[in-house]
Length: 351
Image (cartoon, rainbow, N blue to C red; front, side, top):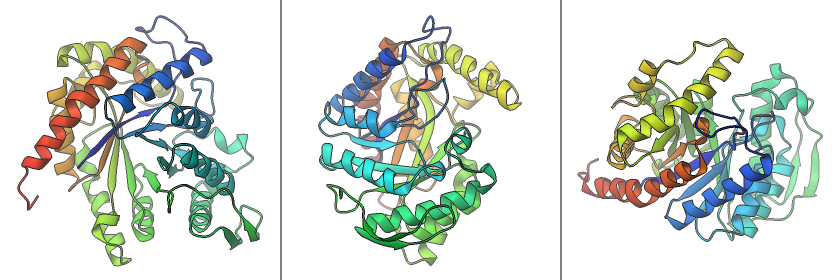
């Protein structure tokens, strides 16, 4: 089975389609409707990102997910990602253990270093400690997951000398995934620790990540972890429409608007329509099209990366109008997911 779901960054960016800025309160109300619908149409997971700047309202993902827990019944609720380098692992565990209790065992953490840097000065950390902060805090988070009373010391945080961390989660072991981009050391670290991997693929061709995924699996095997423990998930940008032409027409204006803004800010090349069309083609990273097209691309991802466990689609980068976004979520759950599961069941057992 490949689980399908949504990741949202709760973006408060005006686009050519949504007609202007949406108030933070309305955006959060819309987001909760999206999570409720995702649950109703049978999607497996909904993730909320973490950002600390004016274009987003997701700086407290556990709070949003707590509200979602009270409105949903079965969908798993996760961060996408928790910027662990700039957070306190004790607080992170407490927040998500509480979410796990509220949802009766549906919480997950995807721990990452984050692609934006605002959290580091905001919380008093040095950007040059980017990697050592993450490695140390992930170590502590895993120790807290394993034991209620923790003895630990490190460089970036005051030591723990046996204090208890409460509450404990509903699940016996709170799921912790590692979110990665394209750094080989990050793939190896996740494999050595035997943690499931969430790969962000937002451009280019997904096949280029196969050597890194293989590196993860090889590191995990050398560390003694069973193959079924080494799960691989993929986070992609995308949108499902009733037709492929309609999906591309709806998605591109907002996609171009948002990526142009961030490209100019970072000094990157501004994306073009030709690049967009290439990336939504058979070998590109964008999942933009009708249900049949998206199901086929999920299967291509599965083949390209040697088997995957989860795909989550980030639709909000295009700042879509609520009605179109809800329709896309509905199609992902009612059309794409059944097609993917049918196609998986049809594969030869050797695959």
